[in-house]
Length: 271
Image 1 (spheres, rainbow, N blue to C red):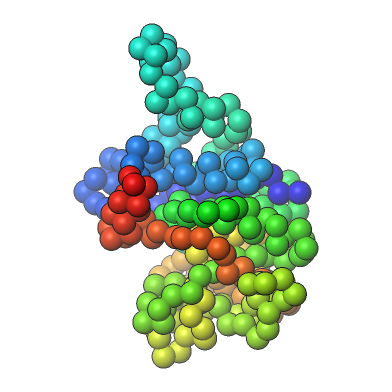
Image 2: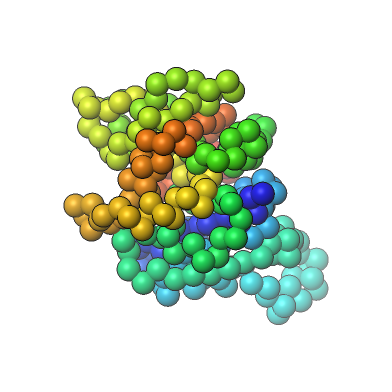
């Protein structure tokens, strides 16, 4: 069973300064809803009720957003304004949990903080920067479907990229395809390789299903040259055991961690 999703949202959002000095990057709007709303909504529509935010003290606006607002609700009700009805429904359906990352020591470190909150054998991780839209099932729903056949595996979402952009992503090395279409056995992962040494053009994006075993490896790995604990290193240890799969998902992704991707997403969703 998978019924908790982890959202690592403690980062400073430096690429969007100065606005992110006071506004969390995850609260920046795509059309009329913040990025984090789309992420939580995707998880909930994938059948997940428990939302765990790994955050910092500067991100309390996220907690405020997913809290009930009786006074505002009363004002809007008198005006027959339904503009936050969807949000209120999401708040009622979900259980929101919060844990704090005091130091920004990488994605792997953020995920390790979630350990004491994970009671199931598997859990999801969603990076709100990667905003995805699909004609059918969401990316997270697609991952969960694959996980039904491979409950002992970690599963990462990947997409094909131009090889010239490999240095922006974690890139997977594969040797064969599994029985399911677009599912690959991962031999290894390389964090941000240059195009010459990239083992493929399949890049990991911000959707994961992880097993409890990932925590054992996150405790073992060392910090990288930037002083961070990378989830890629922990996944590599599991890949050596044949326990990591990649799904080339169906859908479109916007890199809302960049100005270009953020603007592209706003143009797309406003239409």
